[in-house]
Length: 297
Image 1 (tube, one colour):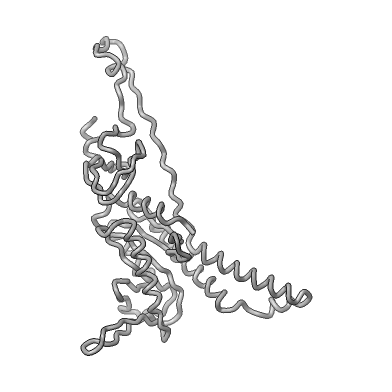
Image 2: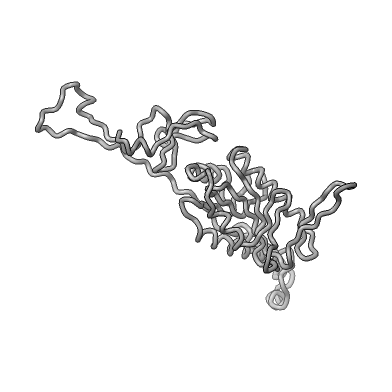
């Protein structure tokens, strides 16, 4: 093997479980493996790298070839990995909005066969239905911007379903500095942090948007962070983010953190994802592991 090929490989102990890209064998966490920088994948220590040139004639006989006789070489076939479906931003929220809207329309037309169309034209969907449309638009807008940032160093997933739950994760960004679990919200009003208690009473933090108490939203993000951390392990930084799309942010300051969850707006989020960090060589494997564990909704 050439010196260049060796320089592109690193023997290391895996920080989390993976699979050999050549033979498909499971590689548990802490197992020794070869990390290939060119493909950003791992393989067994005993597996020959894909694309290595084998000298067949030398393997078949110990006799040296004649000076004018060409040496037969065989290149191992490269197995193309299945592409990862990044998902569609806001897909599940939009489907739920359309399902509720269609159900209401069917109900009204069935109850009022002659006047159903007029009733629908003169009335609006209830807030419990339009809230899904509002959420879908927020996820779609943020997802479009995240897709524009996507590269080998910033990989994004959208609308991932949490197995065993009806909940989903809006966006996940895998970056050199860590993994960001992003919940997109399209709320009106100014986000703020209200701190109560302290010396004589337990300290509590409340997330307000305008006068609306949105503390439960923080709880939801923390649960999503725990899900992702359970996939990648405690050693990988995982940060929860609440990104308010159309909130009334002040001209100076405004962003804050509550219980480890960053509360920011889109233009404040993008530089965080583009920053350097120690996970550059692990991005592809982390991305694949999360995508496999959290299917698209």
